[in-house]
Structures are given as C-alpha cells and as structure tokens.
Image (cartoon, rainbow, N blue to C red; front, side, top):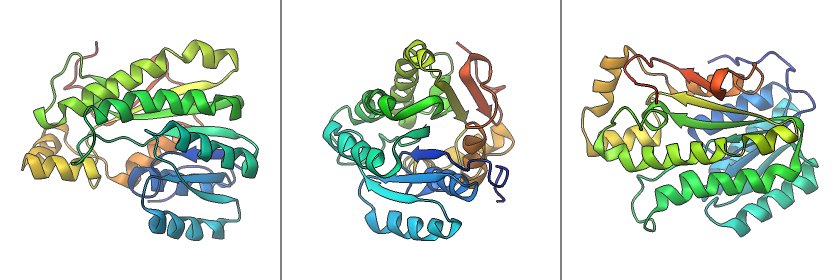
Length: 254
C-alpha cells in the first residue's frame, strides 16, 4: 500500500511506536520514516526482526532506533526512554500499539497488566519527553471499544475488557495532557486480517474471522489499518477523541 502521508510531512518529527517490529506497528513506523520522521522501533523479544526493519528504514535518511523493552516491566520502559532521550532528545508522536493477552504461558492477569497498566505507565513515563503539541495515539479494536454494550466472541472477551480498561484509564489522563497541549486520539478498528490476534482467534474458534468479515462487509488488512493509524497523527482530533476505522453499525455506543 502507498504511504498515506504526504512526502516530508513529518520532517523534524520524532515518533515512537510500541510493538513495532511486525504487523500494524511495523507498517506504521515505516509510513512515519518514509514521511521524514526519526523513528523508534520498539520490540519485546524479536531483536533480529526489529534490526532488519531498522536497516531497511535507514535508507529513508532519518534516524532509526530499534530498542528493546517489555512494557510490563517499568525498569525496561525507563531504559528505553533514556535511550530515546539521549539519541533523539524527545518525542513528538507516541503510538501505543503494543497489546496482547491471548498468548500462552503468560502470568495471571497478563492481559490487564499489558493492555491497561502498562499503557498508563508508558504514557506517564514518556510525558517528560513529549513536546508541546505532541500527539498520542492509542490503538484498539471495535470489539474492545464497544465491549460495554456489544458482546464479543468469548475467546477475545478478556482481551477486549482489558483494552477498554486501558482506553478508559488513558482518557482519564486527557486533562493532564491538555495542560501541556498534547493531543490524544483513539483509533478503533475491526478485526484486522493478518494480525496475530486474528490468527489466534481463528485457531481457537475456526471460522470466527470469516464470520466477522461477512458481517462487516470487509475487514482491513495490516497495511490499510496502519495507514489509518498514521493519518491519526496528522489529522484533526475527532469528536470524543475517537477515530473509527471500518464498519461500526453493528456495534452499540455506550
């Protein structure tokens, strides 16, 4: 997919995308880099994949950092942000993309730890680095955003509840962000073709994604949805701070 951002639209900007060694995060950071931004690729444990992406993006001419951090570990986040401060001096864009909760072998309440607690810690820890007029984007799903009023598939419910809890906790920080003239946007999309979440859902509930595709008419793929996330960093903040991507008629607003 072609870059949705204008050439050189982000010259002089510095952007960090969490969970960006693959999938939506990787395509988002690619769009930023191609538009002229200095970028930070954050990964949890796939160093080779992150470094490969970084090497590719450096051909665009800007700075590219590939930095490891487990967002559920506050010290790991501190180390990440120290490196960002040293190499970039600050940030103008923070995209909170990393999420999870369906993986096996994680600690109890991992979904809430990652999708709520770690999101809040990441934003508050990053606040001193964010420039005046910076933009923070939180990436979520319709299934999570509307979970209070529209049930989702059982296999995804715990993740949806934790992501909605994370969204609510981040929204509580909007007044604090406004004091520094920092803008906040939620990007909510349907199930995305080709993501780890979609793969895991299809594995535990065969046919779930195709059923949702039939209901929605179509589902966005990774590149298409990443384009919408990238646009959320430059377009006007929407009403209620929420940018909807894809069909929402089958969901009920709380």
